Length: 125
Length: 125
Image (cartoon, rainbow over all chains, first blue to last red; front, side):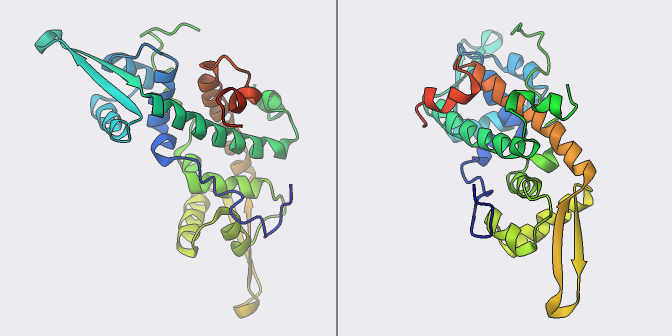
């Protein structure tokens, strides 16, 4: 690939959706994607090491962006909440992931090591 | 891997350094890592599609975190600026990248497809 000044926007990573890219939300979405049946609030909280307040805030953000859906069942003390990724959330995450892969690819290129050998090559594994 | 409630912090991605993770800064660092001799302000601006103000702000942030160094030569209209990644920046980025790889790995796991086939499997390529 040409690496000159004319490579305008080569490293702008336009597709790196900020709603998904935020560290805590990235963790939430990956948790949900690896648990197809959905997760409860408390399971998600543990998996992502978030406080109630933080998790609530991020879930609201993700729900507004229609990336997740929150389903409540029962009432009072028997109320349970199930959080799932939506179909469009799944698609947008896949798009995000493909950009993320290109970031990793760009960075790995520098070491001239194949992806799976990066950690070893950089003395991290 | 066990995917139970006891997997506390499994998706917290503690090593995902927020200074590096921010979208624009991720682009700046990857640009610099792929240009070992350093880049001028205007080259970096073009590669990352950033405004003067934004680039300045992010460079300041990165310099304060000792991830990059900014070298000025000459004076007045002949002044030139060269921006480079520091040695510790290189190391911290490598650590960040290894966490990023695990994020990609977690997400890709869901599709049961090897990393290189993700885009195709998800109909994105």
